[in-house]
Image 1 (spheres, rainbow, N blue to C red):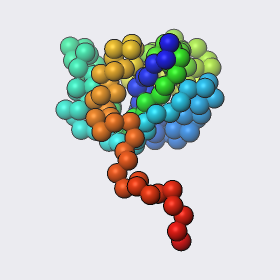
Image 2 (image 1 turned 30 degrees about the vertical axis):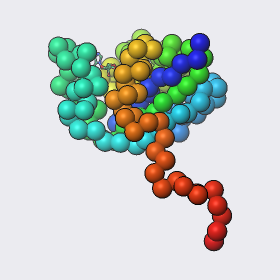
Image 3 (image 1 turned 90 degrees about the horizontal axis):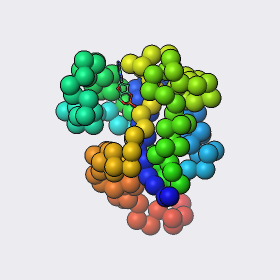
Image 4 (image 1 turned 90 degrees about the vertical axis):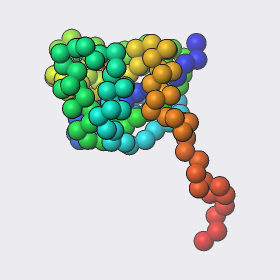
Amino acid sequence: KMEQTFIMIKPDGVQRGLIGEIISRFEKKGFSLKGLKLIRVERPFAEKHYADLSAKPFFSGLVDYIISGPVVAMIWEGKNVVTTGRKIIGATNPAQSEPGTIRGDFAIDIGRNVIHGSDSVESARKEIALWFPEGPVAWQSCAHSWIYDP
Ligand code: CMP
């Protein structure tokens, strides 16, 4: 069924120059990019995104990591994109992710695993609402941008 998912390229992925490679894999699969922004988030926002993990021992380290630099926040759409997107991404722990997946090809440590993808349609809905409160595309000052008037 037609779905949307939230995909985030984490600060290590951005710093290592993997944005194009990652977007390319989702595009070539046939999914559609519905929203995209480069954004550096603050601690309370990152804590909200990872609220379900607040009791984990790695929580504060995870939040430190996510706020350490800009991330690329994206909305991708397509048939079964939540499940298939997670297949493209690979297992959370890069030690278990298969070669051919993003984490299998580009990551070694679970604490620096390059990318995040929503784990269910319900999480996707929540994460998209959190990261894109303005809607998928910012249209401000786009009026008449199709007119070529040098
Ligand atoms: P992500 O898909 O963003 O979902 C939760 C994140 O927590 C996960 O990727 C990892 O970045 C991080 N994570 C999960 N388990 C551990 C762990 N044992 N140590 C450090 N970070 C972890």
